[in-house]
Length: 339
Length: 180
Image 1 (cartoon, rainbow over the protein chains, first blue to last red):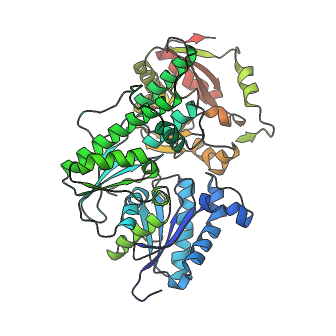
Image 2: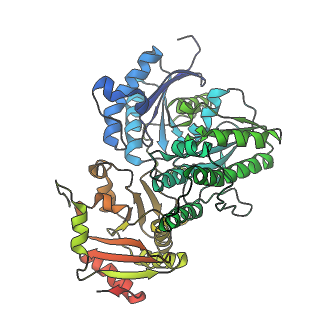
Image 3: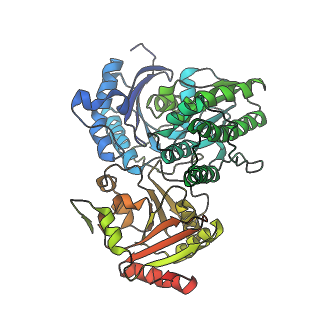
């Protein structure tokens, strides 16, 4: 470790993934280990990671050990331990949180509690460190659909959120109804690439001037469409159908994100979260923003899905401001901003 | 108390209950009726109440829960728990809204400590409850959503246990039901 470098061990266990990362100075990823990606079960004879907290408990020691080995760093090199403390599943969050508290206490270094949504936004700062504020971010994943305005580091204003289903979740559910694999987003994307997005028109919920989202109406509409076609024994093109409703989701995401970016007079928009992996969403949003002279930052896919490197990045800026947590930090399943 | 049957045959449980005395049927013509009926349930929920929701995607399960939340005086939006598995809301009493679709092994339900929510200080609603039905609870209200050819929702309700019979009695005071 070079002198003056701040090295943070970060943990993320808010939902399905057990992840540990070592991040230096908020930008250099020395290791970013995600349980489902490294096939722990092959290497250590364990089990495939699943949702239960028990699985996080089985994984966490291995994942942290692997991260420290990859980073070639020992516990004595760490300056702080960071951990996601919400929003998420309480039992899952507690595993990472307990580990982080124990490590911070034993090593006598600061503990930094990080908001999972803030961490997603900071995945953009892993790609580009010097981004001029203010920034608008679209966080879009299986669990979240938020437009967030960030006037400076550590400050977040939620401009819009979903009132029912998250965008990624609707993609999953429609994929399920079409008999596709889980997670459904990538399967829908594959089909949609060869389909005509204008053949079938599905409803868009604009909700007036609000930056909020609602996707349950679209979900019902698509499910009825599929169901009615089945009842009539009609063959519909899965490609065109996939392209049609993917477009119905993306058009609203893109329109509202662009609107928020213009209103907040930002130069930069970040697209983060698992659904940011979708190429059509990336390119259509980029194009729409470019016409307004706004640029788009999209992290690589491994930083868009849940991972601990983004937690380490967010924690770095909290470290610089001295915003540490004490050992009474608790998991907050419905953590928002402003708390 | 929770009992797990080692050889799960959830559907035999459902069949046995069909046609039995105590099956209530409620017709729900439109979304607003689903919200209204949910509100009625929410108005009458007490700590320890457990509601199972069973039905295909888009059958109206989450809409019913939105109504239940209104009845419990929960502020804000009820967003889907499919991804996070459980969401907690503060109303007149706490509401635990769960979705167990993603659980591969019903025992994960217990690993996640969900039975503690059920026996806690609030009321619990579980979507896709047919996936955990061989984890037998002593008391519950089970609501199965059936969608007919005219897009009308038919709710088949089955109740188990004294506390939940009381809940159904309250519902019967304010709503019409078919069935036995």
